[in-house]
Length: 140
Image (cartoon, rainbow, N blue to C red; front, side):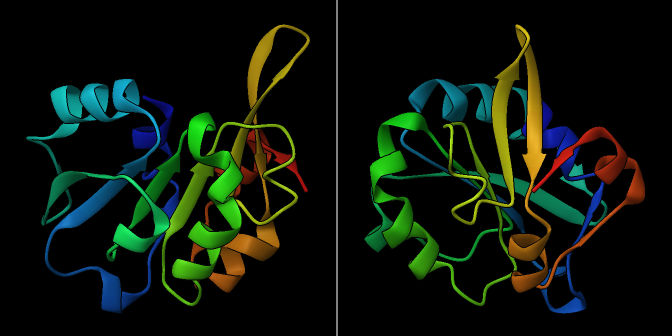
């Protein structure tokens, strides 16, 4: 659910606001199934949301958001390289990936789920972040 909520606070460049709004998932069937069930029929503005599942970095196509599950965190370098220069918000769920270039990385702090926001990674993807999201994040 948080992946979907992040979309409200991220601004994509005008070149990414036509066609379908694609959320990709690599390495986590449960997240893919949940996103498909809950959001597969929704829209983001005038864009229809489409959920796609990828098995590896070599399969990646253009997407607005990419969730990288823990099982694929070892391939993060290849995933990051495949998305270089594209307006994609990369969301991860493994300690250390925020500092390695994930835009948003989930982490547990004092038994609570929090998220890190890597402003340099967001800027390099040509995305902008609402101050509301920045205010809720652990900035790295």
